[in-house]
Image 1 (spheres, rainbow, N blue to C red):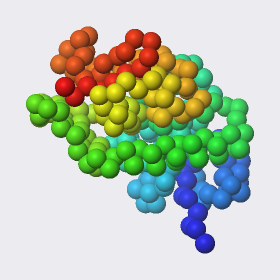
Image 2 (image 1 turned 180 degrees about the vertical axis):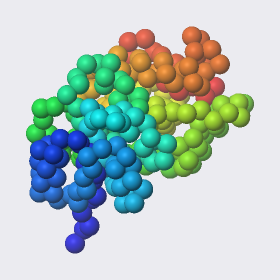
Image 3 (image 1 turned 45 degrees about the vertical axis):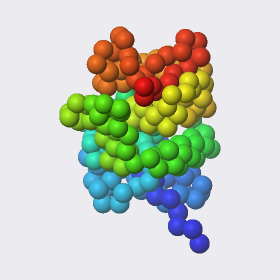
Length: 233
């Protein structure tokens, strides 16, 4: 028998926590729960879940901060669960390192579908990362896929999980223009296929971190109206 996938659910609302625990257990997952950020971080260290469903609006430590702390020690996929649906909130959540964003109200079936989609993307990312290390032609930019580390001119650059996934995907398709929709579907999921504003925002984040001059990029080059490419020449 295949071992059930371990998921950690974090929410300060007992009713929602119980609903998710029961519903996801019925979907075949091994579910742990936590009611606050510190408890969630302790369980992360103890049990190493394969995915975390994390509420944003919690007292003491909100989900954005919990996600940032998770990213300091783990690459475990994180799905943010919240009543906040504004675009800036979505961007804040993804920039904190979340892999997906589900807005309340929701159904357990919808959340389970998002969990499956995120886990599929993680599998694709692992396949992409068969290339252990990428070094640009002059050695000034180094991407270590095993360590999930980017070094520019000898200095480590901190990337969020979404930024690293976007950069990795473009490097895997380097010197080819990748259409906007294909990038969005891989990095954010099919629900975001038309959200080109997210893509522009994150390309801007990356340019500021890895380019010598983000207004005249050498690596992350746009093809107007079509997509983006990572140039090695």
